Length: 260
Image 1: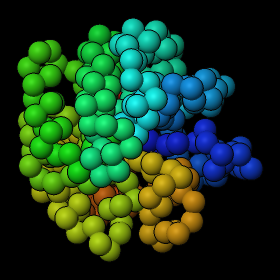
Image 2 (image 1 turned 180 degrees about the horizontal axis):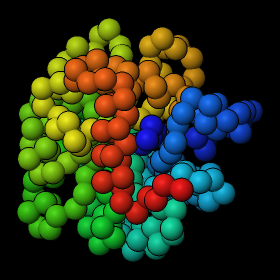
Image 3 (image 1 turned 90 degrees about the vertical axis):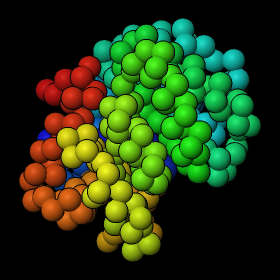
């Protein structure tokens, strides 16, 4: 199945044509979408996308950019919201030392709270990591030592060291439109040489990171086939193999999600 494992469809970027976006996704063969929550005050909007639609699921979490707005978030708050049949993941959470919209200590505290919720619920943790490879590797290794949890490093653009260390912990990875950019040779090298083939998902991260040949336009799930084709090219797979393997990896990781 062709699954968009990370889409931000609740925001104002889609207010004018959201239903048409879902229809174009169906026409493009997209058979599932994970709608991502980055702020607690948007959780209801994210859930509202998933509840009436087959094969659309939701996450609950606070992005590191917004960690400063919920500095005292608790695992219990996340766990309570995750107790819904359509909520299949904790996050998006993580570390961002590129923008630093939230202080590092606040990001780390929030991330550890999300880890606790993922461990308690058994749901996968959707992780954002930018310019924080070493710190992320250290935290993942320390926290896995306290008790295993499922992890997905989404939109992976980190280096080979974090990829190797996270892979050794059983982490999954997701590939998006960045892999199609001419400037992203280092990303493609990690996808080809380091990521375990059975643990690679695909995503759009829409409305951001639009793949070639649509770069410059607003991204949407219907553009996911271009990511699948690039993954196939990088790994030496057929397109069908890329779709099959990434879909299987999605349901192996997000095992609360059930295809209709």
